[in-house]
Length: 398
Ligand code: RFL
Ligand code: PHB
Image (cartoon, rainbow, N blue to C red):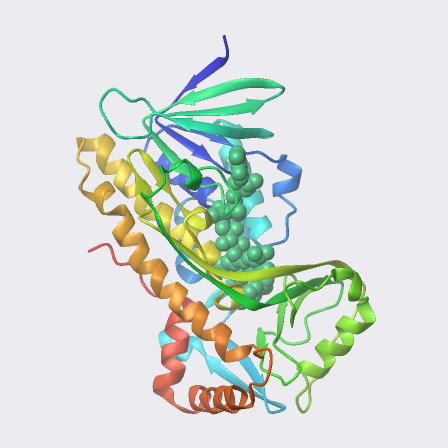
């Protein structure tokens, strides 16, 4: 007989979506079990996002997991754009009253894993979900996650399954054929990202549009820079020795009075870029959240923040269900999240096409991009439109 765990909500994946959800449910008195295929060490060191919207920062504080973020996170009140060898600044704080915080995704994971384990909530590492069943929502079906852990087949029997297992997970694939519609856009460029032991060259992020391609200056700590350049998505990282990366960064981020700080490259890799949306985000007793339901290109820094928005809606819907057996909010989960996610998708697509060099003969587009960037930094209305999207539009639950 395989071991059976019983809980209210079975969560697949200990990324931002799964860990935020588990914490929010715990605060509402709802039990959950998380199964995560990787080790704790792996998820706590994987280099991913860096930018948290103020709503995400505020939520971490409300959830009682914001102390280190408050101490170590770097609040940014604006962002730079570099084009035609000049740098311009958009001031979020003045335009929107809000700001963003730079705090690495793996630090968020470290904080949430610690709080989960401290609260005694089950979080199984090296536990790979293999198969889901009983999801169709009929009275006779009981949802279950079958997983492999410590060489044994086990299962979590639950009321609901949260598919927080990222783009390559099994949850989305468990929805019967024809029940989901996917919307996809693949971009003809990728990001080569490095972590470097060099103090950030600027106190705020700088997004650059350059004839050699996009570049982004970001950071992780006062000692560590995070930098990206646009490359061919099929390029091999072996073609990019450190000197070549620095040469491109110096070229693309050049503007008067700026000097790029350089240092040893600690980590590097190439990520392809895609937009993806699966509709709806619910099937029966299965709810998809975060990257399992949608992927945005990283230019708008929205992916993690969208995962957090999804699970805020889901946790409220589940809280309503367990308090009153009402499913009003759960029934609207998909519509509420998709409206919010499509807007982030639109914004991320727009910023991506504005900043990246299209392949081939694209002289017209290059001039058009610069005209739009000029307009964005000169016009208060256009600066505002950028700023309010970048800091994060409110999550509407109506
Ligand atoms: P994750 O983080 O992929 O977590 C999914 C978890 O599920 C586990 N898993 C399974 N566990 C058990 N059984 C299975 N069968 C499983 N299959 C998968 C995985 O091991 C994993 O631990 O998804 P989640 O939680 O939805 O979170 C999404 C975010 O990670 C993602 O959107 C962001 O990283 C995107 N992103 C950014 N988002 C921002 O908000 N701000 C940013 O500044 C930002 N920058 C970025 C980014 C993503 C990037 N890359 C690498 C794609 C920069 C980059 C370069
Ligand atoms: C990052 O710091 O990793 C980062 C910042 C801004 C983005 C994407 C990634 O748009």
